[in-house]
Length: 303
Ligand SMILES: O=C(O)CCC(=O)C(=O)O
Image 1 (tube, rainbow, N blue to C red):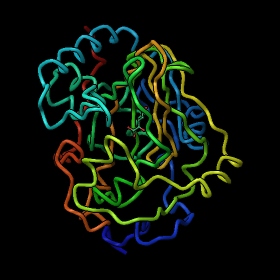
Image 2 (cartoon, rainbow, N blue to C red):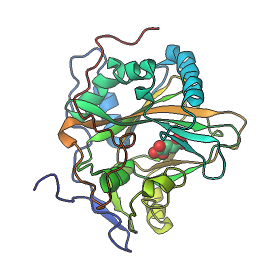
Image 3 (cartoon, rainbow, N blue to C red):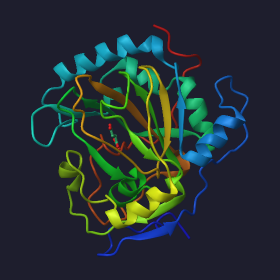
Image 4 (cartoon, protein in one colour):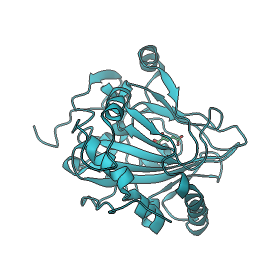
């Protein structure tokens, strides 16, 4: 078997199927010697749930990150990395922020993130994708249930489940401002979705995803098996979520904004091949082509 064998076919017909996960969740289950390593308990929570929440992690960086987000919103207005909401010109997502911000680039290399990520993925890593999802008060719209891996496999050619998203809350995420919902434990099965992917599907799906979204008849039994949890926390909370975890989020109809800064780390032993959906590779800001191992900073970012 080589990297081009499709172990996780999806969007190959009209039928939706549950397939087994063939990859480990944690690739090096013992704590490493770094002072920033996760404890055994944290590693096993991540393995079991597919998500790990670390409160009060980056609180001191939040004011500077909020300011940087405002600067980027103003300076990058017509850039291809900016995606608006489906029904308005409100900014929904700003991709590849580390390319435009020294602060965000430094945080992406902060050993407080990179060491736990290397520990969980068991190898050196690179940033495959990064984004700031902005969910403005009263206007930010929903993301339907999906597994990130399904899209990265079909549209970007990520061969195996050996990636995760680390994300920082830039606002408090509470039950009413469109927080992320997850189905804990759902990362241990793979949903092969129905449909067929067109070239450039991403232009639509990044505003309103329809392909790679499981049907109610598949989701309902999964919801009976896995509890739905909201990911809540104060600004500065760090979250790791596994690449195949089912997640989504509702509209933000509250008066509070909800922005999050996300870094997707992929193992250097899991570099993308040609997209399994047979489509044209997506642009660099969705599937970073610089796959050299990330060099972590020696010490945490201090302002
Ligand atoms: O920002 C959100 O609420 C949803 C994020 C998400 O599901 C994604 O970016 O894959």
